[in-house]
Structure formats: structure tokens, C-alpha cells
Amino acid sequence: METIAAIATPNGVGAISIVRLSGDNAYEIAKKLTKKDLTPRVATLSKLYNNKNELIDIGLVIYFKAPNSFTGEDIVEFQCHGGVIVSRLVLETLFEYGARAAFPGEFTKRAFLNGKIDASQAEAIAKLIETRSREGAKLLSRQLDGDLGEFVDEVREKLIEIMAYTEVFIDYAEEDLPETLGYEIEERLAKIEHLLKHTLEVSKRREGMLSGYKIAIVGKPNVGKSSILNALLNKQRAIVSDIAGTTRDTIEEDIQIGSHLIRIIDTAGIRAAKDEIEKIGVERSKEAIKEADIVLAVFDATEFTDEDEQILNIIKESGKDTIIVINKIDKGIDSDISKFENMPVVKISAKEDITPLVEKLKEILDSYSGEDEHVLISARQINAVEKALKSIEESKEFLQTGELELFSYQIQDAIRAISEITKPFEYDEMLDKMFGSFCVGK
Image (tube, rainbow, N blue to C red):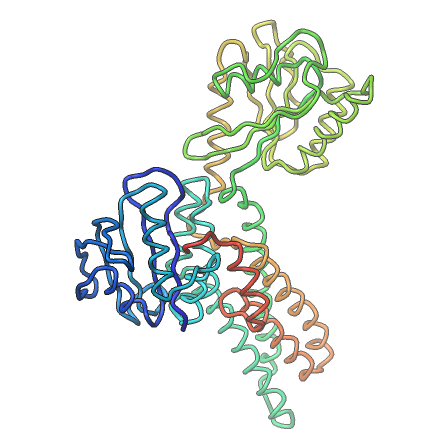
């Protein structure tokens, strides 16, 4: 296979830069730069020369002999001094000796094609680089270790067992078979369906664990949304004024709550807009509610108006996790919170102390971080489970009508769909799309 090379560390000034080389001629090319033999899996301090025998750098060189490497091929890594120039000189020299530039994700793609990792582990590598929380990193580390692959194998085996039961019915239809055999198939299928639906629900709910949870601050004008944002950020990010409608557009900032990096969105006050610009701002506020994982619904402690009622209804219809924030308690308080039903209520003064709000946010965010549940980390994985569930749902009708050949066909479709998570059948198009999103050098 062609020998590929790439810089595996980010551009910029740093202590170390890593240049990675993989392929059939990796070792021979490395010897030309180092002018010495390399011992597998031993870090060797070596001078690095270009093709004109000029010294480029002095660094560590590590040789991983196939198949005991990340890609399953010979790999050589050059740990040279950081900066823009040195690593580029090393890379250019590798090209001059016959290597070519690696495509984005090509190292990981080769690891997949050579059976070193499955597709779910490959996606975990890409997501691990981008994750924005500790919990996300822990989840992806488990998936990189094969956790999701084991789950897929378990579901696949259970579906194969159902097919085996079905074949007994088909092959021995004229024999006296136990009456409970059909019920056993139904029960087994129901358990698989429940497991997949639960996994799908958990995955969609915890999407923000990887990309960062979104929290929208909503409410009518002049209830203190911008003051809450400023207090959370501990800086004056939003303009605060007694004039209603000061915030005309959404303002977004990243903040840390406990171990979670979140994107918090301060929205324009929701009310009957007085001009076109404000109307656009209000519509964006409603859109922010749809996109948010958690909604902070802010109300004035001294009053609850028809506008507040409308906002509360919008939030209830959204079905999003919501914290009711009763602000301005320093000015007095309406103690009736029954209107908020079972929603968590926090009473604060944004000008004095928002600690109760921060603690409640942390509590909810921590509740999203179940360590024992399997989570799908990409649209491709979610789509595979949805296809499997569709095939299982369609199979029930054939099972009930006794059309077992068609039932078996649908179960086979479900097996193919769930297998796509780790070992997709349609390789070329899927691989180009999936690995093309990786950074160069991975």
C-alpha cells in the first residue's frame, strides 16, 4: 500500500511537532532520514537529514512494525522540535523519498480497513478530539475501547437467535412444536426493541455531552435575562437597562458549569414585537428554545402577567428540561409557584447571588451523564438503529399472520442495519464520507 505522511499535531508554535509516516516503505524512508537502523517500539534519538544530506533537526524517532501499529502497517513517527518550519522540512523530505500527503482521516481509515478498529471506534477517535466535556471524553474512551461494538454484537446475536427460532418453525412446520415457541420469539423481539428504543432516546438526550449542551435564557423583556448572563459569565457581556427590549438579538457565550462546557444563549424578550427588528429577535428566541437542551425561563418575582403565561405555555409545549428562575427577589416575591407545576424553581437576585441557579444547572447536567448506558455518537449510528427498529416493527405483522419467510427477511434487514454501526456493508461511499471529516494526520 502507498506510503503516506502528515503532520499529526496542530499548526503553530509548540515544544514538539509529530510527523507520522505509514505504509509499505515507511521503514526504508525513515532510514534515509536517520541514516541508522531502528528498533521497533523503541524511542531513538536521531539526527534527521534531508535528501541533500543537510541536517534538518535532532529528534526522537519511533518505529512501529506491522502489524503491531495503529494502522496495521509499518509506522514511523518523528518527534521533532515544534514550530512551523521544522516539521514542514521533515514532511517535504518524506515526500521527496516517495511518500505522499495523507488525506484527512486516512490513517484511521487504514486502521479500519486492516481490522485494527471497527467503524464505531473510528468515529470515537474523531469525536474524542472535538469533545467539549469530561463526561464526553469518558464516554468516547469507552467506545474507543470497544464498548459500543460489544453492544452491537450482543443485539446482533439476539436477532440471529430469533432467526434460528424462526427457521425451526419453517423447517418443521408439520411437526408438533411447543405452543410457546411463537410467544418466546415475540418476547425476545420485544426486549430487543425496548433496548434499541432506550438507546436511541438516551443518545438524542445526551448529544450535548459531546458537542456542548445548549442553554437558552428566555422570558419577557426586562425580567433580568441579560443580568443573569453577565452574572454567569462574571463579566458585562450583555447591555443591561431598565428599558424593555434592550436585547434585540440572541447573544451566545461558552461557560463552564462544573465539569461541563456549555453554550449559553441570552435571547430577546418574547412579546408582541413593536418593530420588524424586534420581531426577528423574538422569532430567534423561539428558535433558541427548540434548539436548547435546557431552558432557563426567567420571571419577575413581583408580577406574573399574560405575557409570562404565554411564555410558560411555549416552554411547556417544547418539552425541554426547564428551570424556572424567579428573579429580582430583592424587590419582593410572589410566593405562588403552583402555576409552574412540577418544574424546578430557583429564586434569585441576579444583582446579588446566582449560586442557587448554578447549583441547579450542575445538578441537571450531571444527571445526563449516566456511565452505564450505551450512547450513539453520530447521525450515521442513530440512522442505523432507526433502520433496525423500522425492520423490527414491520416484522411483527408477518409474525402475527404466520408469514415466517417474510418475518425472517425483515429480521435479516434489522441485523444488516445494526451491523452498520461497526461493520458497514456499503463500504466505499460511507468510508469516504466518514473519514473525510477527520483532520489530516489521523
